[in-house]
Length: 461
Image (cartoon, rainbow, N blue to C red; front, top):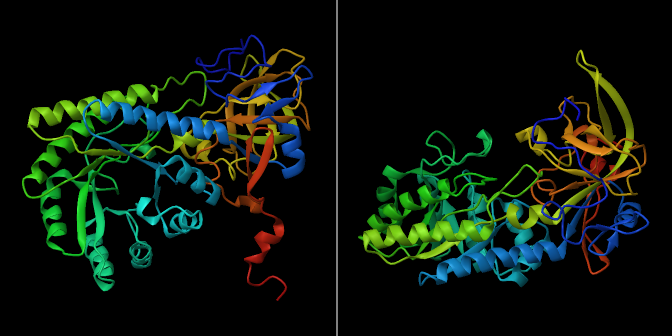
């Protein structure tokens, strides 16, 4: 055991199998050492579309979405209500993903005019869309109202007048929710905690009744309920339960002055990035949250409203992997004991996966171009950017003979990798490919240097 390895990382007994709690169920290696995802050899994908390459297992995406729908349907039906499931588009959004969402019968959340444009391009009914954001522009609000958006989530008092003005100008009654800062802090990374008092999202609980009264007084706004989101990548249910209790209490107060048909309790359900991660199942999460709502409603003597939820990562994250080509390797002796850490440099990095740099996120990696023929070595998988913090996988084990031109895969990259991708150091962003039943389908083509230069107004001038 290398002393540089963190305590949670155990040396693998063998390096050729795929743990399907981390990797898509379709990932497997044949007798010749070739790796397949969705029935397609990863080597063929890399050769045809280049690397880095985002690969999305369509069947895994659908299966995970259906599991979420089933979990919340079962949990709510038990208490005589129903659930509305919004796919959180910020996790991963392309026009084809929108079509998948539509086929699954999900609703869809957007957070900008750009996401709204992609959603509409995918053909989903605007009535099944929502718009979030703490700083929606007049233009974004106008586009949302004009397109017949199902709901706009109000995040500040200023937005009440903006939305009412846009709806009034078109003589439209616009459904709205009000985002509430519940004060509940989920056990998550500091930058992912989005429900504390001192942060940019939502309205403080004590200010909600007055603001809802204002919303109700405006004839072009239709108040449908409260909204809460307590953070992201959450493994424990206690934060959700406490936030739900507080929101139900507020919901009951608002019922005294008018109908409140829905309660949106957000998303943020965690997924597994490494073997050390132990998230609750979505079934357990759904049951615990809805049961808590039911208990609080019974205590207050009110009916249970329609409950809305906003999963994104839990659907898209584990359905995706990223393929990289190894460029160089380097053994580095660390500390007085001169323990060796092998640095493995790949042809992407923080431009296609910003999460390790942003959140110190951990990932899992595997050699996928061949079978391992040597024992494990402690590695750090790093990108090619001019940043010492350009680390994609901080700690992992790969075969000791990992070499240039080997193909690596990073697990659980279906969410927030493509969405956060940049052109840092003028790297072109990768393609996105979906696989299913032995077929590959290009969703987003890879950028080229020509694409990058096309936006420079002074090129060839």
